[in-house]
Amino acid sequence: MKQNEINIRDPFILKEGDTYYLYGTRAKDFGKKVNGFDVYTTKDLIHFSEPRVCFDSGKWNMNREVNWAPEVHKYNNSYYMFATFTKENGLRGVYVLKSDSPDGEFQPHSKGTVTPDEWECLDGTLYINKNNEPYLVFCHEHTQIIDGTVCYIRLSDDLTQSIGEPAYMFSGSSPEWADKKPEGEHYITDGPFMYRTTGGELLLIWSTFVNHMYCQCVAKSSNGELDGEFIHLPPIITNDGGHGMIFKTDDKLYLTFHTPNKSLREHPTFKELIDTGDSIVIKE
Image (cartoon, rainbow, N blue to C red):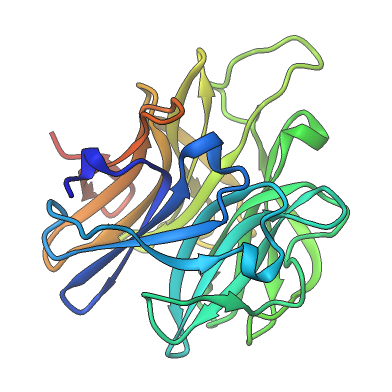
């Protein structure tokens, strides 16, 4: 398969050895009741395997509604998937799944969600701080609070539960370039992912809509950690693409994201990045 033949949203790449593992949201019905996730493998980011099921949400009674945004991190020699599902209370939340292999089969690992039970949340990403402590960065959904936010919360070292209270990072309306909307209209935040530059700066990439177009945004921590003030830089993708993440090949840096943001037309795409030490830019 070629990348434009793969119909997924929210692409995520894990590199293991000489193989790249691609995960994402099954695009049918915007990932609702699609019964889990697949993994695609590639050696060259051009030719991909056929999809293989890596998590069957129906098997674990987790196919209630959404199956969204799987991302897989290697941590303590195991593979952990962070993904969004609809909980028994009808709200969305982030669960942690685990496997001994990036191929799966992943199985539930966390004790329920690692986001607050009474919140509607999505798109959790793992961040390990300079003290080797795990955190979840996630979005508190606009569907519940109108002006969506990005937050973080400490995770237990075994990733089975969150610890303490969530901390606010910023809102969808925070950037100076954000649309100025009438009171009561929603601001979307989704797809956070953390990246540290070669110069030690901590970046957070995330997505929202500007002028009704899906875009890929960048913010930079003022102190190099999650508790800094996040300064919003200009969006780097503004033509209906987003929910991206950053990964490295042997000698290059890439952003992958889905485009266009239209049901059954979405596919992963790859843009080479330049790490300037201070930030990231798309290579022309």
